[in-house]
Each structure stands twice: as C-alpha cells, then as structure tokens.
Length: 216
Length: 242
Figure (cartoon, rainbow over the protein chains, first blue to last red):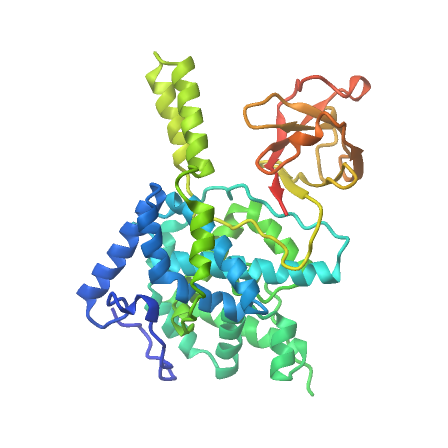
C-alpha cells in the first residue's frame, strides 16, 4: 500500500531491528519477515502460559533492542539494567495479555520498555523537584478499551510518511522526545531555543501529523 | 526574537504524554489521567502506535550476561508467578464451593483471564531513593468525578489520604482496606475534598501492602468506624508499592 501523498523529504535511513534481524525480521522478504514475527509472537504467547524456555528465546531475541531503548532514556547503564530486569520480569508475569492478533510482538515489547523507562525518568526528576508531593503509581489494570482495532487500522507506513512530511525541526524534536525521553525544557535546552519555540514546533508537528493521518 | 505562537490544543495532551515531553505536575496529571480515563488512555496508545516505527532508529546495545541470570532467578517457574497462583487459588476455591455450578466456575476463571489491556505497566520504582516501605493507591469513582489518592508510609504508620469531588450527600466517606480473600477493615472517615492523615491501628498495618484493595463507601459518621460497610462501593483501587 502506498502512502497517498509522496513525502517531501526522502525517508531517513533506518537501522533495522538488528537483534531480530537474524530471524529475517527487517528484510524486504515479506515471507521471512512474517515467519519471524509469527515465531516471536508464538514465543511471547507461550511465555503467557509459563513457558520459561520460550521466555529465554524472547529475551535473547529482543533484549539488545530493549536495552538500546532503556540506555537512551535513562542516565546510566546500571539504571538501564535495573529497568530492563523489571521489564522482563513484568513481561514474564503479564505476557498472557499479549494478543498476537492485534499487536506486533516487537512493538509491544518496545512500548513496555519505553513506557517504563520514561516513567522512571520522570519519577526521579519529579522526586528531586517535589519530594513532598504524592505521586500515585497505580498497578491496577487500566480500564479495558475498545481502541485496539483502530490501532492497526492506520498502517505504520502512513505514520512514517506523515512524520517525514514534517519540517526538519519538528520531526527531529518529536523523534528525540520519543526515543530519548526528553521533556519540552530539555529539548529547548539542547536545541538552544526558547521553551515557547520548542512547544510551538512540537505542537504544530503533532497537529500536522494528526491532520495528515486523518486525510490519509 | 519575535513572539512565537504556541498552539493551544487540549486534545494534544494525549499526544504530548505519548511522546513524553511533559514534566512535573503536567506529567503527573497526565499519568494519573491515563490510569483512569479510558478515552484518554486509548488516544495515548494510538499515538504511541503511530510513532512505533521510530523504534527502528534505536541501535541495539549489548546487555551484560549476568542480567539474564538475575531475570531468570526472579522468574523461575519453580515458584509459579503470582497471577497463576491466584488463578489456581480462585479456581480451587470455586471448585470447592460451587462444584455443581459449572457455569459459575467458568465465569470466575474467565474473569481472571480476559480483559487484557494492551500495555501492562511496570510498577515504577524510583531509582536513587532508599526508602522505608511506602505504598500508594489511587481510588476512582466510576462514572463520577471522585478521585482519592492514598499514601501509606510504614515509617510513621500513617495513611495520608487526599480526596477530591466525592459526593456531598448520602453519608460520610469511610475508607476500607480489603486483603485478598479477606473482609473489609475500616481505616476511618476521610474528607470529601481535602486531605486527612489517619493513624493506622497496629492490627491493620500488615494489610496495607501491595495487591490489597482500598475502597470507599458512604456511611453514617455518628457511628464510625464500622465493623463492616453497609453502603455500595463508591470508589476503589489497588495498592501498589513504590
């Protein structure tokens, strides 16, 4: 399926999912790609049934990727290792929630890793600033939602095409925020622009992406 | 530098939370909202999904081999994971009491297994903060505005409770702790809107631990604390350990 609007900028070169590339994950060959995804999906599903050997295979296939995510967001490797341990222990406990019919296994795992790393980063920042404040951390399941179908309805390719259409400064800022866990203030400091300018770049970028995705 | 115009778009909060640019109070507010506002959470997940192709830009990092040993030690099947133990416990409890009612057993087992959210959250630990056991819970009023946050600090055995927007009539809010499989125990009355610090009775302290449930009912203030709740549960939440 082609994106309906050609991107203004050529898509940047993207590093493949190297840790799962051994299984052909990111190759052009759709069949191998599909086989690898199914294999990982099946292993994550087995983890949900308490299969520890499958858990080890999932770890071996994905831990370098997930560690790459943690290392970029957290201040040092020790913190990233602690986070990675929590993430896999959580995957072990909650893998039954993985639904192979609606999510890509590697995306599911990357999302868990990033969410946790960002939670840790923000909690630590917040604690040093407002030590006395209560921050609720809820372990209870969020309420069930009916959004899953919509998630897969927008193809990844459309989202990438829309991201590539953004202005360079917008795209870079959104990318850095997402992958490095940087706040508005940190992004502004890094780019040496006023906070208001950074907010403007990102919000305009998000509005533009939303419009682009809605238009298709 | 010319004044920049910052688009003011409340619908963007989900996107901002998803990409992670919020901090301080804005981040905490969005994080709490994610936990109890299903529409907001769905929108956040949509944005995360949209941006997930960016994960391809992340280079792999080698992990020190001992980490797998730590993870394996924490997950060895020898001790079944808590979710499985709980499921087994519930299954056997149901089987013992309702052997003839096959339908009931099926329903209970299903309630344990279904309704998975797409993204389990890892319970957050704060990195560099050696602290006495502290547990939190957020209690929400389904369909209402009520919102209660409770923090228990084992060091002084006090439960700090902050409530907002609990109903103004129908009784006074009373807080209960319910251990897994146990009966509710009153922790005392709380404000409808505002903070209160409750001294916790030594006998009740062991119940305030991760996994237990806190709940609120509306009761008669004149006779509180009560041995058992009479009203419906107004709000409830699960305790998490920090």
